Image (cartoon, rainbow, N blue to C red; front, side):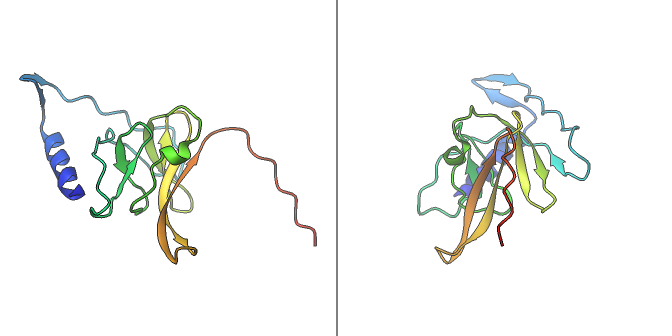
Length: 152
């Protein structure tokens, strides 16, 4: 069902014009690509988040990630059924996604307008005995103090 919804939305967006209540309006302009990324970092441009209805528990696994504003984007790094980002965003005001960056470890991260980063990925959950999706959020701020070396 999710694939059908995504395919329908993609077909709708492929049109050169958006028709609303009998009026024809030009499509909105695409955001500027990011130019300030550090060398060696892959960056990308994102389409606006797609509004998607929540799926039923018995539906096919979802590769979409629910954002705190109720919209959806593709989950990164092959994550399936990732927990909603609102559960991990914290007390900070929502900041829209402005691009994607790849870390030196090969993990794709969403970059947000306020400098926050978020990602999803599959991790081994030993308590579950299987791989499960994880959602992570990192907000800018003071760096934590360095940990003291372990006493021997």
